[in-house]
Image (cartoon, rainbow over all chains, first blue to last red; front, side, top):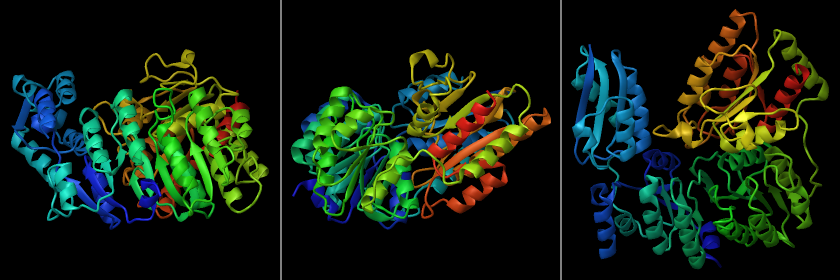
Length: 56
Length: 517
């Protein structure tokens, strides 16, 4: 069975990155959701962020 | 005397939609002429510059810095503005501050290893990297962000296909997985119609009408609007079709998209040829013969797609629907009633839409009779020179890029549509056609936001001895968080004719305009 069809048989558990309203909407519906307190990597410095991502 | 007041907070991050809405509220403070509350992104710094409320300190900010800047009367102190920003920020903050909010995707996965879908809506320049991380961790992705390049989209979708995962988006506005509405989606009954949609409000409209007809959806898979273009080749629609074919809950499959690239249309249709489950295809104005050649049911409108899917599910024949819920006599009476109230010279249409696909459907259905100018015209000769100024028959998609730069999408905050209807005066306009999209993600009361402008526009025309006809449809179900019944009642009380679907609203508008040509 493909992973998509496996998903159709599971409880949806969401990780939300970005708009907090999407997180709040899911919470209201009692959907399992984790909100990432996201901010741009390396303070938005793209060069540094790209260097950091290569370290991982 | 007015002057620039500002406050900077280094290393404080808030999401863009929250801040856009707060900017609007700050402008309402007495004595404040202009205001911008945002993160120090290039876009926000440019907006501050354009509004004339910037300085060298603001120009030096990074995307991790938060700023408030305003042009305000000297009687307004920055402390007053900051206090109001603070109050609004805490009001917007989620009620569950006690919840652990991990700082990165990696830490979120560690915190909740059973997670299976990542919904991403950060600024486009950061979005692809987060999506890639999610896919590499075997997680399905819904990528709401736009401004992701076609190359990045292709790379992400190829990775998802290799791994057998969903990569919905970029620019994917709607999905319903296992009955859970993600981003912009209505509350639809659980059922047996599976939808793969490349156009957000088009998919919402089909699902809403399925619900109204008493059936429900098994899954709604969004692909993002670019999926069926040549660059991407329909990768996610093909994945979605395969998954729905293998899903025992899905008995009928519906595909929704603006007309695809020719070779992609063939590829998608080949994938459904000989499908044991009936397939309904709405390529909004797409090639009917081609669709039927592959054994699928072609459609005349989004409503027609929903009706055909429901008929097929019930084992009935899928007949074309291009009529009305009301009888011919009732429609005739409605049309004549409106036509009788117009003054000499009133003849033009204003289609003011928040949903892109609904705009497109309106123009397609009316194109037989009317030449319509637009910011997203059917052919380039009808491109509005200035999208902010209507001309003859005009249809506007307020969700298109030129209206959403630095502003929330009109489904979240319809302010651009409110302003347009409030400010634009044209004595030759006869009918205003509108959509009201309910559901999660949308404004908490889209109708309430529009009503004052609708009433004012009607009153303004009445004062000149004219009549403004307003026709609308509500894309919403009775289980949506907004009150569908109350939304309809208030519109009707304000004299708006509310039709059961966009297609019927458009058709009625066409009948009215044809009579006064």
